[in-house]
Image (tube, rainbow, N blue to C red; front, side):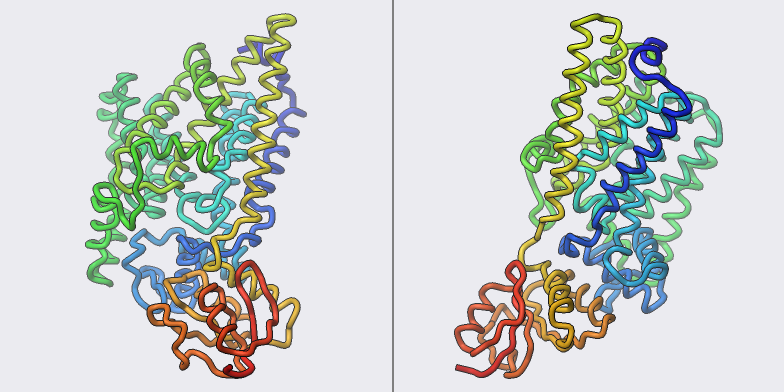
Length: 499
């Protein structure tokens, strides 16, 4: 639309430079700013951190281990673990290194989205708009996605990349797009298994609506690269089963039917769970007010982005329909939808500004209102998302890291500490391994059935790190103690004598 270029957004070499560096700045604050402030999360980040550290130690790159045993509870393929292990090798064994693959996943997706609109469509301002909305989406710039060492940030990147290249393949039939589709599809499967297929119903429906299904099925490249894409993950699954019998059974229980047909580990909800989640957790609160009206604009007006907008809308609707039917529901499962949703919002806003720019006073007022509302969403949601995460704690179960950090800073002479495991706690296990690598001598003890009164757990003169309120109360009642440091429910103290 020339009207947009002439009246709404000018496109010059300076606009490309400005928008690109603005994209990089947004990526820095969204994904890389203060990466280690949040403690290693219990579900499920710290498990990946420990698994990658054990891979670094045992050099077994095909069987993932947790706490010295082959891990069949987390049956996902190992691509993320490989990347975290590589990051450990390059930058050392620490929390920031572990989170870099997720951070780069977010940044690479933003840069790709920008290049799609800036390079292919020659609309750098539209590319910037897409990135600005995505970087201010709390559901994407969040725990369990791009701010922690979890699978979903990497999965969202690869799912969008293979979906976008398949869209190009369906439109052109060119083999190179199917090759890109195959590569990124294989990477998505190697990241989180069957979860990579959740966009498939939407892609299939788009092909049917656009009468492209026959065109795709008659193209030899669909079969050549399609079977190639399946070969890598299938080969891995079979090889892993040969090394560790029971792996395929774990895949079946965790992914193929168990998670979809049953609410695993109590993670259930009504069919409208994810829509309520937009408000209840604030994952896409402001964006929802933009999504419906501007998506309608994007789908109504003819232009170079109409088919891509339709593709994005169909994938989004089918994706949430699939998630809503599934028995297992978790708040971060919505992450794959956000890149598709922000595309239609941005395109609708871009079209609207172009149309309104032809109007006089009313048009200018409407553009100002859109700009103010958009600015509020980007600034309010973006800032609050980062601020909320930087002050976030998952209770006393994950606060070992901050407490160790405070102890190391304020009492560098104390290097021998005893910590207690009273429930499953991979976060404590990660910090035990991390601070042991920094010279601490950490003694561990299991608390059987939360029986804090077991005297064999304690010895006078020991320095204890306690992150459980009930255990802390028991110790202070029955022992004379000296507090060394405190941090959000955790306390480091010395046992002087039994009362």
